[in-house]
Amino acid sequence: MAKFIFAILILITLSFAEIMLISPKELYKKIKKKENIVILDLRKSIKEYWKEHIPGAQWVHFENFRFPKNGTPAFFVPTEVFVQKLGKLGITKDTPVVLYDAEGTFIPFYVAWGLDYIGHKKVYVLHGGFNHWKDLDLPTTKDYPRVEGKDYGDFMINERIRATLEDVKKALGRKDVVILDARTPELYEGKAGSWKRLGHIKEAVNRFWKQDFEERVNKYGKKYYLLKPKDEVAIFYESVGVKNAKEVILYCGQGLMSAATYYVIKYYLKMNDNVKLYDGSWNEYSQTNLPKEP
Image (cartoon, rainbow, N blue to C red):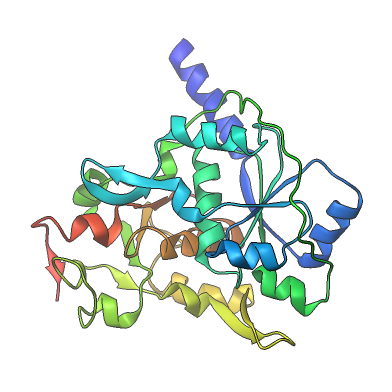
């Protein structure tokens, strides 16, 4: 009975966690009000950050959140390491976190998924990224924020949103599970790629993550991505059975692109709550002899 009650408490706690979109104007209001938020700039080059960034943002390369696992590269870092990194960024379990990159791509969604994995309650992704912010001529700075390290605090891992290779094995051939590949059609079809084996997991369906977004170009000639209307995006996922699937497993090349799809299915469309990101992805699967196509 005690174990059952504890399990229920875990589910209740994790149910309050959510990844949310935030518009540039909404974020600017929070900054002006000096709300207690931590903003992470995940753009690929520190030179971009030096040139200008959103006031209060700290620069962190997203690769700081990935590490090899038993020789296989690019898994999300071990949880104990992740929470230590968060603490050094001034983040506790109760700190609202805002994530952005240059264009509003899958990178902030990947880190957001990592925060979801530990049940972090308030996670925001800046819709359209820094280039959307610039399109609205919102203020930027060259100043670094003053940050004091903190103890992240207690956390509970939500294993329900992460798939392992063993989970994928068990899902093969099951009609009540949808396995979805978020890579480009060329990679899915095995016409491109640098892995040991090319192609895709047998019976996986393909939906390139970018198909859920529309491309914009700001007044400075820089592109960014905004989500398409929900009813338009939902058509494909309903057509492949995501809504009624007992489980949805998402993968791509290395677990990055599929993080955007994770957000779309679980939080944007709210179509299926049992969605798992396979962060080993084709990076790991291609090293096995498990069935693939073509």
